[in-house]
Length: 102
Image 1: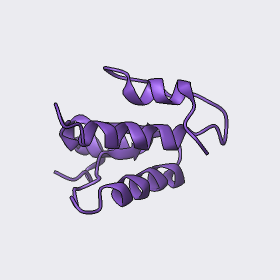
Image 2: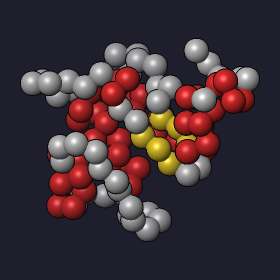
Image 3: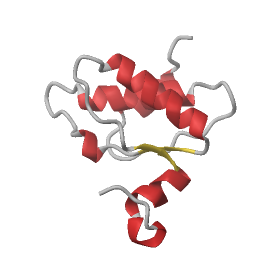
Image 4: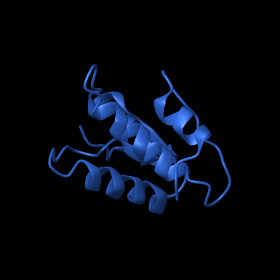
Protein backbone atom coordinates (compact mmCIF):
# COMPACT_ATOMS: atom_id res chain seq x y z
CA UNK A 1 0.00 0.00 0.00
CA UNK A 2 1.58 3.34 -1.02
CA UNK A 3 2.05 6.09 1.54
CA UNK A 4 -0.60 8.80 1.37
CA UNK A 5 0.18 12.54 1.54
CA UNK A 6 -1.20 12.65 5.11
CA UNK A 7 1.04 9.74 6.15
CA UNK A 8 4.04 11.39 4.50
CA UNK A 9 3.30 14.60 6.42
CA UNK A 10 3.20 12.63 9.71
CA UNK A 11 6.46 10.85 8.87
CA UNK A 12 8.30 14.09 8.08
CA UNK A 13 6.71 16.37 10.71
CA UNK A 14 8.91 18.05 13.30
CA UNK A 15 8.20 17.40 16.95
CA UNK A 16 5.74 14.94 18.41
CA UNK A 17 2.89 13.45 16.41
CA UNK A 18 -0.29 11.58 17.22
CA UNK A 19 -1.43 9.17 14.53
CA UNK A 20 -5.13 8.37 14.89
CA UNK A 21 -7.06 6.49 12.21
CA UNK A 22 -9.33 3.53 11.68
CA UNK A 23 -8.30 -0.11 11.38
CA UNK A 24 -6.18 -0.85 8.33
CA UNK A 25 -5.45 2.81 7.61
CA UNK A 26 -1.68 2.43 7.91
CA UNK A 27 -0.97 3.72 11.43
CA UNK A 28 1.69 1.09 12.13
CA UNK A 29 3.41 1.67 8.79
CA UNK A 30 3.39 5.42 9.39
CA UNK A 31 4.88 5.12 12.88
CA UNK A 32 7.52 2.63 11.75
CA UNK A 33 8.57 4.82 8.82
CA UNK A 34 8.70 7.87 11.12
CA UNK A 35 10.88 6.00 13.62
CA UNK A 36 13.27 4.73 10.96
CA UNK A 37 13.34 8.14 9.27
CA UNK A 38 14.39 9.76 12.56
CA UNK A 39 16.99 7.12 13.42
CA UNK A 40 18.60 7.25 9.99
CA UNK A 41 18.43 11.02 9.45
CA UNK A 42 21.83 11.89 7.92
CA UNK A 43 21.75 15.49 9.27
CA UNK A 44 20.56 14.88 12.83
CA UNK A 45 19.90 11.23 13.66
CA UNK A 46 17.73 10.61 16.71
CA UNK A 47 18.90 8.37 19.49
CA UNK A 48 16.69 5.37 20.16
CA UNK A 49 16.24 6.66 23.72
CA UNK A 50 14.55 9.76 22.24
CA UNK A 51 11.80 7.80 20.48
CA UNK A 52 8.64 6.62 22.19
CA UNK A 53 6.01 4.69 20.23
CA UNK A 54 2.81 3.76 22.08
CA UNK A 55 -0.04 1.53 21.02
CA UNK A 56 -2.98 -0.18 22.72
CA UNK A 57 -2.29 -3.87 22.08
CA UNK A 58 0.61 -6.21 22.65
CA UNK A 59 0.25 -7.52 19.09
CA UNK A 60 0.51 -4.01 17.61
CA UNK A 61 3.58 -3.25 19.74
CA UNK A 62 5.14 -6.54 18.66
CA UNK A 63 4.38 -5.74 15.02
CA UNK A 64 6.02 -2.31 15.33
CA UNK A 65 9.10 -3.82 17.00
CA UNK A 66 9.39 -6.45 14.28
CA UNK A 67 9.04 -3.94 11.45
CA UNK A 68 11.53 -1.48 12.94
CA UNK A 69 13.94 -4.31 13.71
CA UNK A 70 13.61 -5.60 10.16
CA UNK A 71 14.38 -2.19 8.69
CA UNK A 72 17.35 -1.60 10.99
CA UNK A 73 18.55 -5.17 11.36
CA UNK A 74 22.17 -4.30 10.62
CA UNK A 75 22.31 -1.85 13.54
CA UNK A 76 20.92 -4.39 16.07
CA UNK A 77 19.69 -1.80 18.61
CA UNK A 78 17.55 -2.53 21.64
CA UNK A 79 13.82 -1.97 21.02
CA UNK A 80 12.71 -1.56 24.61
CA UNK A 81 10.88 1.73 23.95
CA UNK A 82 8.05 0.37 21.81
CA UNK A 83 5.33 -0.48 24.32
CA UNK A 84 1.64 -0.55 25.02
CA UNK A 85 0.34 2.16 27.33
CA UNK A 86 0.43 -0.46 30.16
CA UNK A 87 3.99 -1.41 29.27
CA UNK A 88 5.13 2.18 29.66
CA UNK A 89 3.87 2.28 33.22
CA UNK A 90 5.61 -1.02 33.90
CA UNK A 91 8.85 0.21 32.33
CA UNK A 92 9.00 3.66 33.89
CA UNK A 93 7.38 3.04 37.29
CA UNK A 94 9.25 -0.01 38.62
CA UNK A 95 9.01 1.18 42.20
CA UNK A 96 5.22 0.81 41.99
CA UNK A 97 5.23 -2.68 40.48
CA UNK A 98 8.38 -4.07 42.04
CA UNK A 99 9.12 -5.77 38.72
CA UNK A 100 10.50 -3.03 36.47
CA UNK A 101 13.77 -3.26 34.62
CA UNK A 102 16.56 -0.84 35.38
